[in-house]
Length: 112
Image (cartoon, rainbow, N blue to C red; front, side):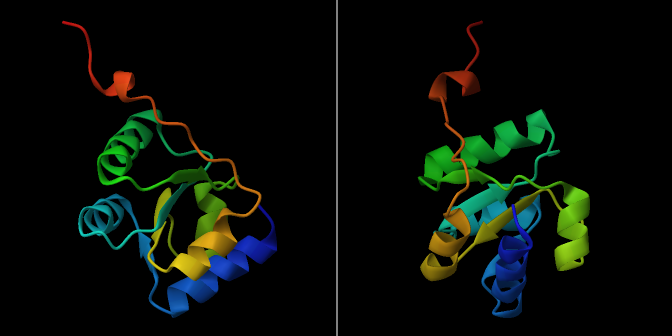
């Protein structure tokens, strides 16, 4: 992800259209506010599974940011691994050239 994307996320935050952190992202997905969710490259697999579950249930796409949580800290001033964009224009711009994370519903349910 280029500095251009980080700048775009920074503008999005200043406009009040960015939710940072697990609780805020899950809440914005459940409220129908989130247009897209983005995760840092070093986001834990357990937390990613939780985000994917919520996004799958609420029909919100998830994308890899391609940067670390430290890079997010540098660009946005807060160290988080997951972000949600609540504006469709900003979300479309952020999604460009990013890989969407595929969600397999079978990974949420274990065979016991």
